[in-house]
Length: 484
Image (cartoon, rainbow, N blue to C red; front, side):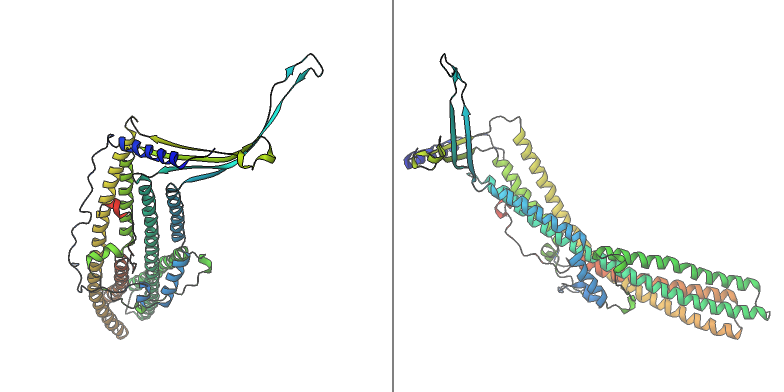
């Protein structure tokens, strides 16, 4: 069978004419959304400088080689990041599936059969006869849905935008993992500092106890004085196990974040006093739109849903399908590839939704509602990002101020402790004053360490709020469907 070009051209004209006649079918109204981004301020209210700092590799800004090494291990081996990366692979597969609808579907066909017909009864011998026939075919079949109105392209763009969102999600997880690691490391250093203070204060309290016991032996102190100081020593000793527990648990949690078995984790720690205070400028609020991967991911999902909504609108239009097949067919295998055994077919079909019980309208309403939800989520993500930066800047300013004031408290308490220790040796101070002086110093030192921890954690929050140095290279994400 030979297909003439003129007949094939006629088929295409009929398909196009059928599509035009169906354009008057029922279609819902469509109004594109506008004003996606809320009004952004010209500068952060709590920023002292409008400049922007380069914060890529920000864990290094604390001046700890061990922290920098752990951050690098986390970026390479963290399991949460690996899970997010596997989601990217899934999104790549879905994008590939969606893109396949833009191409024809071609399949190879091969068949072989042998048929036996019922026998015919005869008077002569043999009493009946039976006939057999063979059939062989070898060829190709193809089908193609014409994307006349761009619906398949929109579905492909939806999948591509979802893929981009998955990649942004991976960067969000990586930033959160690095921030969690840094906070845990800071907590480890703070626990080590507090433990050192507790051990030092225990030794000092034990020396005071010896001095009071010596005074009691000569009658210048009583048993109550000794018991009170023994209580101070016991309290300091009792604070150490909880700090040891915190140190060990922080080590284990750091092991989880770095993807390393805690028993094999080489971790030394150190002191908060050995860290460097970072210097960071937040830049402009509008920069967050390209500096935070979570905002970029939300935007990509909004773009995907807009393409999906447009595709749901186009589902009301007709669908045109072209099919073709060609094959060699023969009753004998030796004649299968002869030119006269070639046969073929070409067909065109058009499907127009007429009545579906409201299914298409329901899908469109669902897509519109989902788009509105993602639009508000996108706006909220932007406002949350601005709030995160402002809160981090306020926390840095106030904790720094608090640390300076608390350092003066520790300084005066230490001076009072030195004076009472001297007067204790001279025997010119009462035990109550001594006890109060000791407790004031111990509490001031411990509180200073916790305030210093809060200050460094505020810097971690600022780095995370600014996107951790990540910068989006804006991809082409279904810009037509976004209505921008």
